[in-house]
Length: 182
Image 1 (cartoon, rainbow, N blue to C red):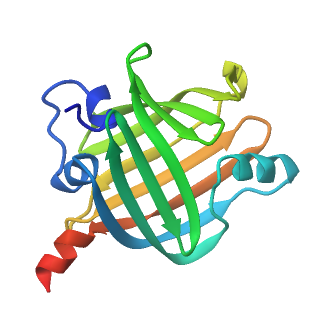
Image 2 (cartoon, one colour):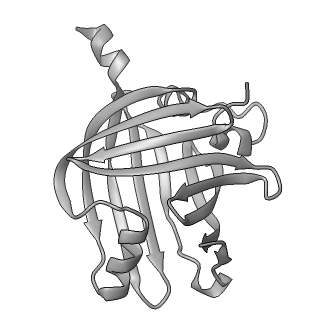
């Protein structure tokens, strides 16, 4: 069985912190809290709707369910009742992760350095039409393990000429690990 697409895109023998390895290691359920900040404007709102992104919120309950169906990994994110679902695969042609949100596809390249997993946007297409490089969103997305052993995330995307699209940041723990502590 092939591992999670992010693990496939990393160099062999990359040693990840336990919390990152757990979340990207297989199917599971995770719960935590996050803050969601969205950009403003008509085009920004349209872009967020196309990507099924959540609305603004402080200290939002977040749940992530990771399921595997052959080479496809389905991530279902529940931001306080707002569902964002994506399908992830490893794109052998580009050597990176392809994440699909409906008709929107984003190609992501993970890079592990200094104990953190940075995720960069390499390509984007909508309805199969590629986005020109000069309009490609910029991301400062990073994942890491905090001092409490939790999976931490800071996901962001800015678009040229539009500014901030979205930023959501917070933490997750494995629901299985939480149940085992009780």
